[in-house]
Amino acid sequence: MKKTLRSISFVLIILLIAMLGYLKLNPPLTQGSIGTTSDKLSVIVALGNKHLLGNIHITDVSINANQAPTKVRMQVSNSTKGFIITDTYQPYEEEYGMKDYETIALEPKSAPIPFSKQAKAGSENPARIYGLSITEDTPIERINVTYRYLGISFVKTINV
Image (cartoon, rainbow, N blue to C red; front, side, top):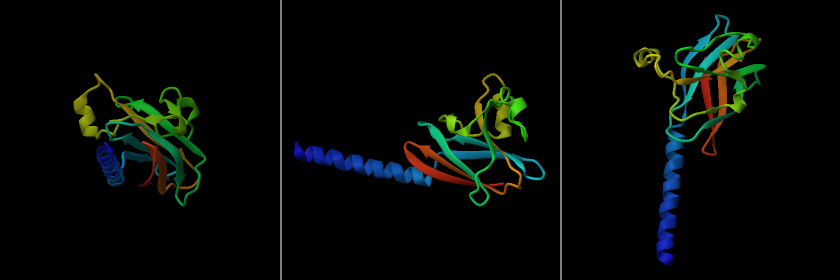
């Protein structure tokens, strides 16, 4: 009995280590297109979860040299409507589903779809899409997104 329990424990530990290794080599957060104004003061980045299970929870967003941005919103839209690039979120909050990024969970299988594949999919079943929208007084060159997936913390750097 002890030998069987020890063998099962060993196999579970090996599986856990393999899963952690897989997640570190293949992080779940993926980015799609990046939209920006010509002066790079407003940026939107399409984000999604490419894995099949578990939600992604964004815990922190910083820009350039780890500065906290002043205006950050998450747009929750669909593939037929798309996103909006703006520096004033107030008029568009309802229409484009702008919310605080900490309250949104990126669902499994929500990786951004390339535009060519969106056209083929049609508008019968529009997919839910997520866009991280940032507006700042200085040009945005780099975005650091800290997030949790299955209890593990990750950081993704996005160059604009």
